[in-house]
Image 1 (tube, rainbow, N blue to C red):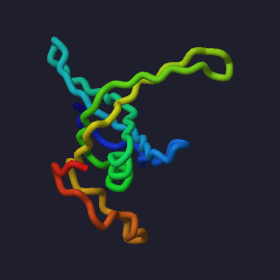
Image 2 (tube, rainbow, N blue to C red):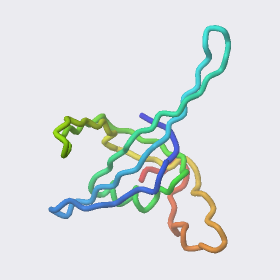
Image 3 (tube, rainbow, N blue to C red):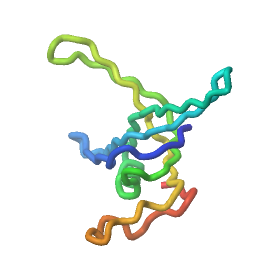
Image 4 (cartoon, rainbow, N blue to C red):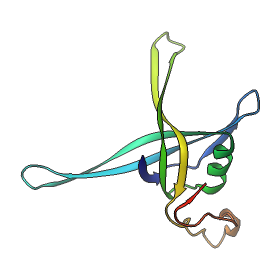
Length: 125
């Protein structure tokens, strides 16, 4: 379970078989206090992948900056790059995505940038 902010616009693609897949980044802030009482904060970045119907729903509903809850599992992909080096990527395979706030207000010059049917707080996509 992760709660964070969408870091970039979700990207919708389709596999060769036509299956939709959406990828987006999620910035998850973390705060703690050191033994001497000093506050510290950091942000962890996660790549989230949604498939099929959830892919289409997240692509339609999420925008950069939206506060969201993501539930899913870890998925590791490995490959060899063109230079022959082994690469590995850990992603969150989304099972559920919930919008936690209203979308950012679109600038006046771009009124169509905001979806017309936006899920309300705590509504599953």
